Length: 219
Image (cartoon, rainbow, N blue to C red; front, side):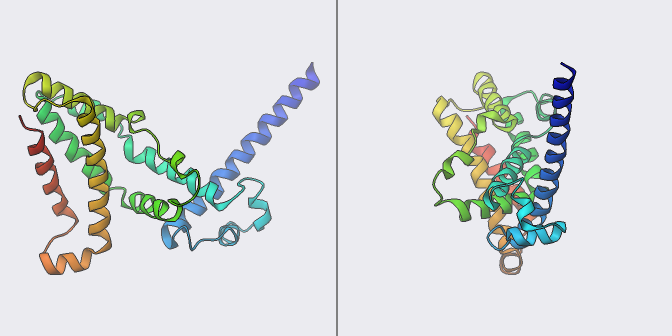
């Protein structure tokens, strides 16, 4: 019995050590992916940065793609989960006011995580033709951003501040808001100097879109 307990303790210790090393590898890969791109980063570069042999990394990750997917899932979670979101909008009375507050909070949150958004954009570009790519797309319903928007819209429909909407339109609208903000941020960031010079428009002017979205919800 004691041998079994000792064996389990050793396995748990080995598992913890392996997990720490996986995290270390992922953090180094994350930095390299953001700095020079997923496609242009090799397992050898990751190994060199860590000061370990390339073969050693394969004890923890089978492929570079596996690391990239793990980072992608982490970044999606960061972008779609805002701590204390429900409490921040609860002080607003009407559903429409909650929607406007949510839009401003979400945009502000996204602008703080441009590196993550750019990574997700490249991830899609690199892996969109890979078999099984679809499984990397999680359900938005699993995150509090979606659920907060959904609750605010339903609240607004009930209090009359938001026009009536069928459930499919509600879910599609939330999805559209997410994709539109992502796309606009990517567009502005990638051509920031040109757009600023031509139109005197920069990343802070994206705030205008929250007013446009809010108008679309009005009854």
